[in-house]
Length: 279
Image 1: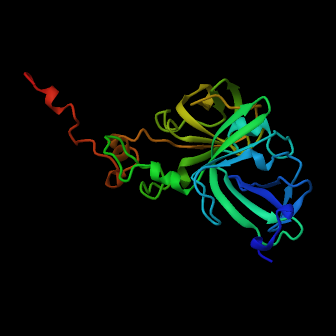
Image 2: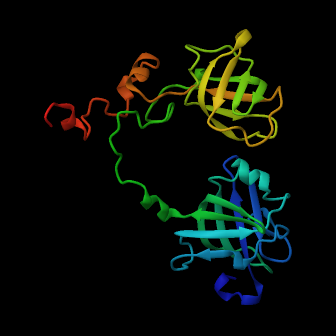
Image 3: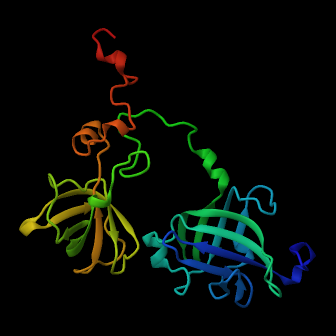
């Protein structure tokens, strides 16, 4: 039986949320749990059908332009700590209707990824960005003196296997993390890189590295772009990836990769005329 033959009294709204780390959570506005496509959709979190607002025409199978999903916080599914730490950023969300008496033929109402998340006294509101959000991006890249590729991606092509190292935290004060790892290169090798947490309360999260230098007794000290959201205890395992300042000099000198440089360091800028007397 298709959704077109289902009465209004047996229709339930469901949400399937898949985080970037592989965790999948199912939620429903029904008053009991539903098993849909092998995933149990829990009724406990308290999200209701009135919590969804969608712009544009509601067509089966179409992706939403934008929509907001609101609900109460639940430690068993979506907790305040996980929202604030960024675990749900970029998560894929599918919203669909299903016949709760026979949930074998769900009807997709919209899909998107979680964007901005706001917390209030009564719970949270998450913005979902659909396929049309891609039209907000520039059609072509703008010129820039710095490289527009990300170190190690398919355009950069620098092999990263030997440029990632595991270490353990020996101390953490604010945004400054000290690791039991000897500094590599000039000490600032990891500036612009990433620190991935493999243990502790921040496990599964990533932190951008703003600067790094050699500490005492063969240690490496990294300064993160912002302090970790959750507490860090000594002994936590992390993975530290080298970074790049996106300049041609670094690309050629440190990585020997100038042939793949994705910038225009010698292209005159709009200030060219002001460089000459009398201009």
